[in-house]
Image (cartoon, rainbow, N blue to C red):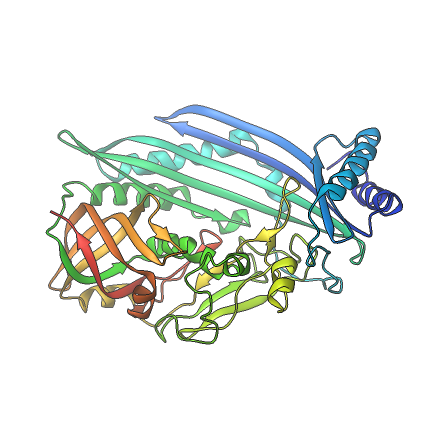
Length: 448
């Protein structure tokens, strides 16, 4: 806990700014407790612990904005920050959208996003969990004799917000995680497979046994991988790979990007942009969600936004500034830290669960590719082009037949989305961006 009163400190800074010439002001205070242990080959490789606190101040005057932040919360420093922030605003370019949100104060939400117990877990507790996960990777198969690392960590974020129009608000949120990157060897060949789980509540975290086994299984599945001949075939993205793909698409539904013509979805509102099987949601109110929060970085109430409804693009996601420029309502998607101004970010962003079991999706694919990993950056949300190296397994006669690597998938994102012909029922949240498995009717596989 801080050794100062956050509410009094923040309201003093904001009031000082308003008395010094700011027409509007907001303050954002963040306090982060972080601990992580990294184990490799049964040895503790790294222990990290930190407590970071910082305050950001935005001021608005004559349609101009100024912003500064500090990690030094002593009164003389904060007084200086107020003076300098107002001076910065005087030098800024006037913009009509430069004002803070005037939405009403957010209502209380029961989100279950804080587990006070995570702060009681020290390095010794985390080391034991990381070691147990690594040992379970080793125990899976004699071909797994090393790891890149096993990690276990906890974090607690305390957020305080105050603005000219929205009274003081605060919340706390926790996170805990456990991961292993296992290395499988066969002759001179080595392949890596990882598995990670992240949750708000420690009791929800996957066991070290499952994390270790899953990492080892993924590494083993890659042994003997090779390229396949180039072809146009159906392609299934397993859930985690589909989640990575979806994260890359998020920029296309950002109101800021649409306004700047940096999204292939600009001008598509109200039209079909995906298969009728696809519904995409951003939900900041999900119980125990990794992206859930009662309010966003502008103090705006979190909410559930359906972005794509059965293939139809219904809305873009907004900060109050982008919403004002677009002439629509804000969506509660202003992400922010003490050291940054609000920008459009996801809360819990996901493709909604479908009705197909993954096993059936594979069985119904006579010949194709099953993708488990995406490497590098291959999504251009401006042009709508997709080209990315992938790994996985080849599907032959409805069964996974051999591991595949060294191939590239290519296509146009609009065509890919419209060509989704199956959506899985295996939606799980190990990140704030998630998806069930999906099958694309046909993509170009660039191999040998």
